[in-house]
Amino acid sequence: MTKKTVRDVQVAGWQTLVRVDFNVPIKEGKVRDDTRIRASLPTIQYLIDQGAMTALCSHLGRPKGVDPALSLAPVAEHLGTLLGKPVRFAADCVGPLAENAVAELKPGEVALLENTRFHPEEEKNDPAFAQRLAMLAKIYVDDAFGSAHRAHASTEGVAHYLPAVAGFLMEEEIEYLDRAANHPDHPYVVILGGAKISDKIGVIRNLLHKADRVLIGGGMANTFFRAQGLKTGDSLVEPESVPEARQLLEEAKDRLGLPEDVVIAQEAKVEAARREMAVGDIPDGWKILDIGPRTVKRYAEALRGTRLVVWNGPMGMFEVAPFAKGTEGLARAVAGSGATTIVGGGDSVAAIAQFGLTDKITHISTGGGASLEFLEGKILPGVAILQDR
Ligand code: ADP
Ligand code: MG
Image (cartoon, rainbow, N blue to C red; front, side, top):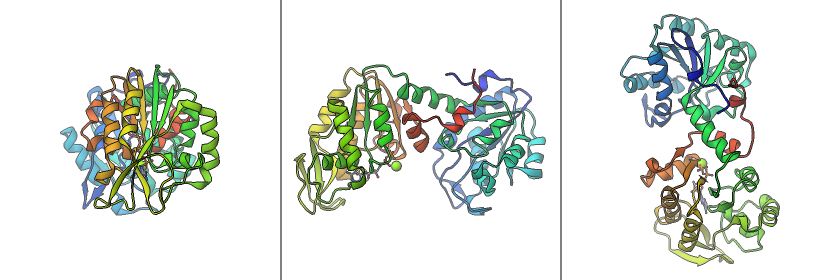
């Protein structure tokens, strides 16, 4: 890790501004899924134990101006329950309300500031707004890896005015994703799936040269089938990506693995008739909705003896039970591979949880877009701005 972390700076007795990713689902004033809140607890607890005065800030949703439905107030209450101590809530993230809340904090106390996106200056990365945020503290800790690909005032701008270090979640994400993108142990296998090839073509391009094999599944395989001249029936295909897929196939040769069999149906419904077939022309009116059992077996074999496995994107439409077998089979193979395993992507992480395998994965990335950009080899603005060791 080349970036300074919260361990490298003196925080005891200091006002500390912490950017977290508390962009959680809230319904009827209650937090419905607190995974993201729990992910930052180690950093928050550390600051409490060290005797820092901690002001947390985050965005929530996509408000246009102040929107009470997107207030972080319910999160303050929920966080208080998780920490077992009250969390003060400030109804604004800058200005007198925020300043007073921070001024009243004693060492070891925590406040949560209101949704940063209630101010349009946040997404514009307005320097004056970033300075107003910076005025609240002496140190900035970034624990919001999921927002690090965006140069906003609370994720990047503020770090121009304060010493900026990584929180523990940020540190873990950088460590694992840096390994995947820049310093992999070999043999190294990358598995990519999901709906669209256009979302992940940059990742394929970058990792094709780092990994020993890149195995493809999910809807994105269909565009490769079309590039090979096969008929794809009613399958999801992105015609504008066919030339690029063809180029990748030529460039990659056998380093790129494609499914050898697939599961097809006329509709993505539980009651629809389902057929397994070897990859070939797909009949009109039918679509590919999962990888087949032979592909699962072959991909699982490719994971044997590997030291690093990165997986992003389900192998099929796993939300519909009859088309979840490919994703489940591969998830079990990844979990049991004995390698260091990294899983990213909202749907892939949900799939892993659905199969009860979360604890068997070395690192579950919390950042969807941020982890994809990292794997594309891009420098994330929220990471770049942190102080080097
Ligand atoms: P992640 O969130 O893990 O990055 P994506 O968002 O890229 O994954 O893709 C997940 C979606 O891809 C799921 O909703 C799944 O149903 C869909 N999907 C996977 N395979 C297919 C397929 N063959 N046809 C249509 N949709 C698919
Ligand atoms: Mg997704």
